[in-house]
Image 1 (cartoon, rainbow, N blue to C red):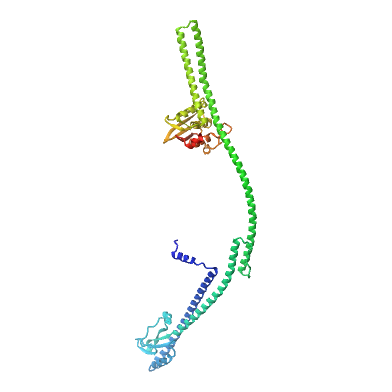
Image 2: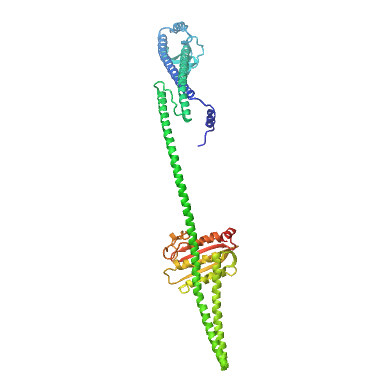
Length: 547
C-alpha cells in the first residue's frame, strides 16, 4: 500500500511537538470530556426536542378534535351560528400570539372562507404536512388543516395555526443552560486533572531521574516511597530492581576478574601450543623436504643402477672384442716373425680386426650414449639449473635412462613430440616429472596387468605455451582417490614401495618451478591421463626458486 501523503504530513507536523505524559493525559481526558459532554448535550437536546414535538402533535390532535366538534355543532343549529362562534374565537385568541392557536379559519369545499378568527390573513397559507411539523415548529408556527362537516352534510375544511416560538425559545434556553453547565464541569475536571497530573508527573520525573542515575552507574540510589498507590508500588519495585542490579553488577565484576585471569591463562596456554605447533610444522616441513630429497636421490640412485647395468653389456662386448683383436694381433705377429704369413691369412687377419674394431666402436658408442644421457639427466636433476633445451631431446634422454625399468616387462612407451619445441626452463625438473609419471604407472597403473602402453605427447596450444600429456591404459584411479592424489603422503601402497610424495612433488614442480598447471582425468579400468600446460619461458619467480 502506498503511504497517504496527508497522514504522512500530519505525522511530520505532530512529531515537532514533544508533549509530556501529563500534557498527553490532559489532552486525552479533555478530548474525552468534550466528546462525552457533547454527546450528552446532543442526546439531551434531541430528547427534549422529541418530547416537545410529541406534545405539539398531541396538542394538534386534541385541538383538531375540539375545533371540529365546535364548528360541526355550530353549523348544524338553526340560522347557522358561525358568526357567534367567530366572535368567541376572536376573543379567545387575543391572549398570546407566540404560543398556542393564533388563528382559526373555516372554509367550504369550494374554498370560500366561511369564518376566520385571530390574526391570520384572508389569504390562507399552505398547510404543513404531518411529516414537516418538526421543521414548521422550528420556523415558529404550524399550519394545520383538517376536514369538517358543514350544513347539509357538506364536507369543508378548517385550518388553524399553532405558534411554537415560546416552546422553541424554551428548548433553546434549556440547551444553552445545559451547554454552560457542561462547560463548567469540563473546566473544573480539567483543573482537577491538571493538578493530579502535575503530582503524578513529579513522581514520574523522580523515576526518570533515578533511572538516569542508575544508568550512569549510581546503583545505590533509592526513590522515596510515598502513599499506597500504584506509583508507590512502582517506586518500591524500582528500588528492589536497583538493589538487584547492584548485586548483579558486583557478581559480574567478580566474574569478569576471574574471566580475565582465565583468559590470561588460556592465552598463555594457546601461545605455548602455538609455539609447539610452529615447531611441529617446521619439523614436518623439514621432514617433508628431506623425504622429497630422498625421493629425488632415490630416483637418481635407480637411474645410476640402471645405467650401470645397461653400460655393462656394451663395455663387456667392447672388452671381449678388444681381447680377441689383441690375441689375433699376437698370433699374426708370431706368424709374421716366422715368415709363414700367406696372403689369405693376411686378408683374414685384416677382416677379423675390422669386425672386432666395429664391435668395439659400436659398443663404446652405445656406452658413450648412455653415459651422456645419464650425465645430462643427472646434472639437470641434481642442480636444477635453468637452460635453453630441446623438449624432445630432453624427454628422450630421460626415457633412455629409465628403459631398463621395463625393458624386460610387457610394457611399452611411445612418444610424439615435435623437434621444434625449444624451452627456456628447468630440464631437470621436467625430467623428474616424467620419471615420476613412468614409475607411478609401473607401480600402480599396470599392477596385475599382462601388458600395458604408456604415451608421451606434446603440442603447442597457444603462443609460448606447450601442453605435455602422459597417458596410460592401466587400471585407472577411483573417484574417491582422484581428488587426493596430489596431497602429500597420500598413497594406496604404504609399505609396498609407495611414499605418497611422487605426485605431490610433481604438483609442486609444475606450479612453483615451471610456472604451469596440471590436470588429471581417469576412469577405472580405462587408464589415466595427466595434462601439463607450461610456458616456454619459465617465470622469473620460478627461476629464483629453482636456482
